Length: 300
Length: 171
Image 1: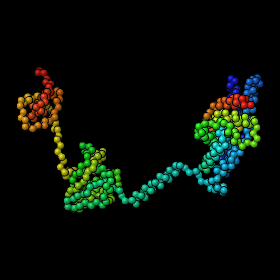
Image 2 (image 1 turned 30 degrees about the vertical axis):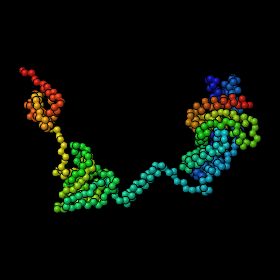
Image 3 (image 1 turned 60 degrees about the vertical axis):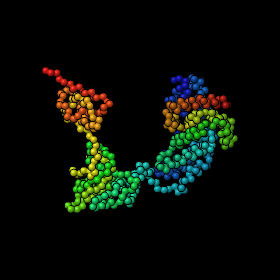
Image 4 (image 1 turned 90 degrees about the vertical axis):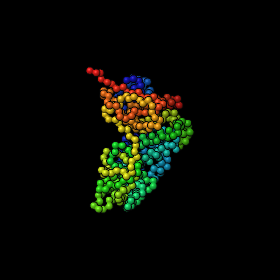
């Protein structure tokens, strides 16, 4: 054992075991330096223990024991668990929410415009607030994906179960099939009742395709307003590969541009009949398009 | 000032009301905690504040049914003293703290020991006090300060050597 190890042992001499104390005494008998250290440490402990003890100020006890009541005997309840407190807080919050919903008027998140009918007006029990956000209007998924808001005028579907969106309370009540001869009624929620006739004006705010159709439109449903025709590109039929045709030498200036179908050249397909459509005319100033070479198979 | 803490561990008795337990704790350890804080802080006002906070926390623990013993008291008092050090940003080492001690006729030896303690670091002071005066074992001090017993033994040995050197210079 090194000298520093004996020094550490001497520093904690009070807590040594019997065996450690015996080893230390044997070392002290033959080491004068460690004996001097042992005497210094013993004096040190005596000096520290001889320090006068200061009486603590009475203010400490007064401040600590002030809230303690004079009567010491009382019934002690078990410690309040934080988990139980959390559960109690959640239960209270749920109760408050339920009570508020039972008493507060229903909120309308839909902003349907004023419904119009040709012969019988629709009855809207309560209108939505002006600042409310329009509720998404779900229907069958369409190939076009998300479509912008487009007001359409269409006959309301009758006799078709229409479970609307599941998000709000207004959408949880499906339309019911009216009995034969009765006016069809579309009931949305508990406050909005629509009694349409032939046509109704429905403002479609958004269409979101979903995996599960939430609103099944009838097979014959079509928007009342004619859709805006959009130019479509009609691809040429398979095999109709345009071949290089001679460009006209002179083109009348007033001749209108005629759209041509978009066609693809598939390698390996032999040249077919010339396209019946006239050649594409872009402009007189632009160079003529280079005809696409069609690979031809060598003659046998 | 010899405090035999090791033989007087307080185990909270659930049959005793916490109001009685805090009174018993203060009767037993108020003076020791206050003097320990004074040795660390060298400021009677700071020692009083820290001791008061320590026993208020002990009262709250007992009220919640949690055990409080002497090791817990010294640990809380020591941590509170460390907070006080951080608040001050310095360790008071001048002689004003010694002069404000209400000690009747302090001997030269007592003054010398106090001056030596003031020149030691708070870590040296606390380990010396907890071992020699409060009577804790090194393993118990390690648990109290969040260190291993071997580290506390090394720290105690170094603190003794520093005290020895300073006291030899003072006397």
